[in-house]
Length: 623
Image (cartoon, rainbow, N blue to C red; front, side, top):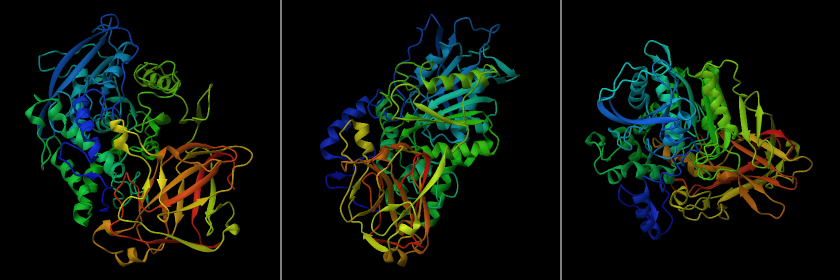
C-alpha cells in the first residue's frame, strides 16, 4: 500500500490535499471559492432552475430548527418554500432537498431542486446537512444514527408536531395520518445517502430519489473488487482512492475557513477540525498504508455503518435510483447493489443509469439530459421519471406510470431516444472470452494458446487512469496510459457485423502466480496482499485506445494460490465494427495507493485452465 507519490508531490497541512507544488497557489484560490463552485463542483449538482420567481409561485422562509443528533444538539439551517395558494385548507405534499458534500441549503442543487418543486406545487424544505453551511455539529458521513435522526426531526417539522426555534409551526403539508406528513426526498451524492439513512429510521418518508450516491463507503474510498461478499465490498480493503478521499477531507476541514463564525458545536474529534472522531480515525488508517487486522475490522465496521449496505433492510420507501456512467467516485455497481438489495426485500425500486456523474459533465450534461442549470424536468428523460415518481407516491396519482425497472443512457445515439429500457436488470445476456497465452482474447476455449506472461510493479505509479484532483481544480488530465513491462493486455479480434453493446459489470475469473505474495499470504497485515488493477479499453482501427469512462477495478487478491473473481465497474459502451476490446491487468494506478513492495506477477494460460472474461452484452458478438 505504501507506494510513494510521483516526483513533485508532497504532504501538506490538514487543510490541504496532496497537490503538485506548481498547483498550490491555484489550490489556495480554489479554497477561497469553495463555497461557490471550485472544489464543490464535482460533489454538488450546480445551477439555478428555470422556475417561476419567488413571490409569484412561492414564498421562502428561513427557519432554524434545533434537533438532537447522536449525543449532541445541532441547529439546522433551513429554508421552507411555500407554493402560492397552499394553506391549512389547501395542503400540499412536501419534498425535502438535501445537499452534496461541501454544499448547503443555498448551493446550486439544493436550492435549485427546492425552487423547481415549489414552482410545481410542492412544499419544499431545503436544509444544510450536519457540518455544512450554517448548520451545527461536525460532519458525520450521513449515518442513520446521527444524520438520519436529525433529518427525521425535520419530518416532525413538516408534520406540524415540532416548531422551529422561533415558534413557527407548519400546518399546510398534506398528511397521511396524524403526525405523518406526505414527504419525499431528493438530492445528489452526499445528499443521496442521507435520504436512505433517513428512510431507514423514519418510515413516514414516502418516496426517495437518491442521485449518484454510494452503497458502501468502505468500497467507494478503498475499493476491493475481488471476491465480493456483501453489496459492492470485499472482505478486506482494496486500493486506497487517495485523490478523491483527500479532496473530501480538504472540503470538510476547510469549512472553518469558509464559515469563520460557524457554531462551536462543529468541532471535530481525534485530531480533525470538523469530522467526528470515527471518520477522522478512518482517514488516518487509510493514510498509514497499513491494515492490521483489529484496526481494519473496526474501520470497515464504521464505514459500513454509515453506508446503505448496512441498513437497507430497514428502508421501505419507494426508491428511484439515478446513477452516473461517468463516475469514478461512486460507480454504477454501487447503485446496482442497492437496487438488488431493495428489490430482493420487496421495497419498490427502479434504476436509471444516466450519463453524468462526479467525473465531469455535471455542469454541462449532453443535450437532452437532466440539467438543473436549465431546470428541464419536463423535457429530460430523467426529469420526467422523477416527476412521475413523486406524482405516484406523493400525490397518490395511482394511474401514473413510473417507467421501466431499468433504463440506461446510450452516448452513441444522436437524436431521438437516447435511453434504452429493460423490464429486468441486468439487461441482455452474457458473452465469454478467454485469455490466451499469446495475448489474445478468444471466443472459444479451444483457441487458447498455451503460454505464460509476466509483469512487475515499480515503487511508483506506472499506469494512469484519471486525476480526480485535476478535475476538482480545473487542471488538464493526461490520457490514460500503462508503462511497458508493468501490465498485461489481451485483445480481441475486430468487431464484425453488428456493433457490440456492453451494458453492466464485466467480470473476470483468473489465477495469478506471485511467489513474493505467497510468502506473506498469511500476514496479519492485509496490505501485504497483492493488488492489481483490471480495466477495459476500446481500441480503434487506427490503434488508438480509450479507457471506457476512465474506470478501473482495483482488486486485492485474497489468495495467490487459487482462482478469484474480479467484478469491474459497470459500463454502458458500444464497440463499433472494426474496434477491438482490450482487457488489461496493471500493476498500479496513479489515482490509487498500490502494492507494498515489488511483486512480480505471472499469468499462465492453457486450453483447459485459463482466465475467463464475462461480458454483459445486449447485442453483437465479440470474437
